[in-house]
Amino acid sequence: MKTILMSLLSRGKEHDSKLLLEDQIKPGKRSIMQKRIIESTQEIKIVFANTISKRRYEIVNIIVTSANCAVFSARNAVVSSQITRIASPEKQELFSVSFAVDIPAFGIEVYTLKPTQQENNIMSYLPVTSEEHPLKISNDHIACVFNASTGMLQSVTVNNVETKMEAQFMIYQSDHGGAYIFGPKGEANRFKTEKLEILRVHGNLWSEVIIRSNGFVERYRLFNIEGIQGLGVHISTEVDIAAVGANNVDVIYRFNTDVNNDINFYTDQNGYQLMGRKTNSSHRIESNYYPMVTMMVIEDSNTRLTLHSKQAHGVSSLTSGQFEVMLDRHTFRDDGRGLGQGVYDNVRVNSDFVLQLEHKKSKTQTQEERYAFSTKEAVLLNEFLQNTLQIYSLVDSRISLVNKIHPMKDSAFPCDTSIVGFRNIFNEDLQYKFTSLVLHRKSFQCGFQENEKFVLKMCKASKSSKLSIKSVFPKLKVKLYESSLSMLHDKGQLSAETDISPQKNELRSFKIVI
Image (tube, rainbow, N blue to C red; front, side, top):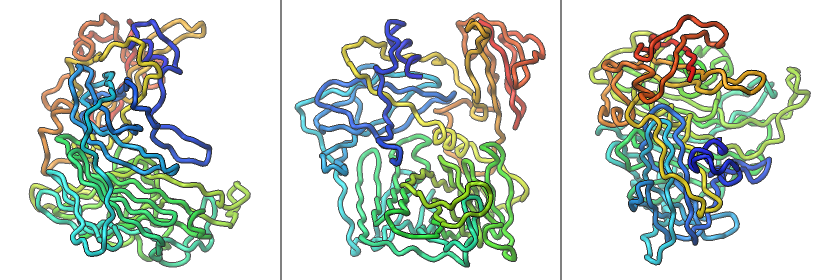
């Protein structure tokens, strides 16, 4: 990826991948991913690469060493930013520089971070006292209220409709569980944290509440942006069972809501269709757990709640209005399934979620309990969460780079269609054969209140969209063949003007010969 970026941006003059440094680094094998610290006392070029077929308009964060800096876009215009003072484990004074980027599908843009003598307004995290009631953060679409004593989420308001949303860390005591078997001993108990610290910050681009305690960190963030990113509550958790000193436990993250979903909920099938699940109270707790690859949904006649997840987890909804996510496990027992030991070499675990509330246009009961579909906004929000914007910093800012590359500048994909495979295929002699293209089209659930202006910024309306190779790459002269998913069998040649949109819930693959 870095080699390709350098070659494109330097017009073929540079190919060394070491010239670009990833924004996310892992300091050690037992560490979680962390943001790279950028030395901002000198000019730095930041490369943003959009790897999906949708336009991205979102807020990004860069960690720097000095607050006296300014951000310039690929068009050399000053970009409005939010600078927030953050703490580091080494007691080093660091700052988070946040700003909005707007990058077309598969676009690459180079922003510049320049030192300046002008002092910027610096935001700081402030401690929260138990008397501060209500503890609240909000943007133009969502308002979140927290318990000032515990810092935990209490309610979420969307479109002036408040939904109860009590969040808490809990633990199951392990009974017969092992590495592959979840076997709790009775109901979950609330985990009592020590050395609780609650911090908050209110900024022009984002606001956040942080709860820190021994072994746990929880962040709730709202983005102030007129885009898809601003339609969800962004939640990040860190769990370190070793630091807590707990043994034989399963740590969960539980939400109690007033969404009356009865015994029904949905989990996604490997990121595709939502499969209906039913809780059987007569069975053991573990038999009511299901895999969540990217999202889970509970809903009633008025409201749908979607929990988007960047990492796969086990989830359940044991009672109406309640759902829980398994975060980490510790067990000494060998369950005899092949590992030969329990799970006791725990490290700090990070999980990223987006909580999304949507309200129906009219009061309607769920029509189909066996399966469901995501809404248009949920599909886009999930696609952005799973495919994060790629961020790199240039080692030597003296290297000449083009400021932007927009291969699909004048075209836009339909909202329901995504590229799930797009790569060059070579033969045994490393000679180019063709480019493979795999498309996937999703179905949308209708009947919900929508922010259509945000959606249409990212993609085209599906009803009026015709997708063809010529509309995507108008300047390229290519031969197009429809193929099997394995790319081994051709189904026939197509013209560049042929509509290549798949049927709903289907995949369609093509060979492009340049």
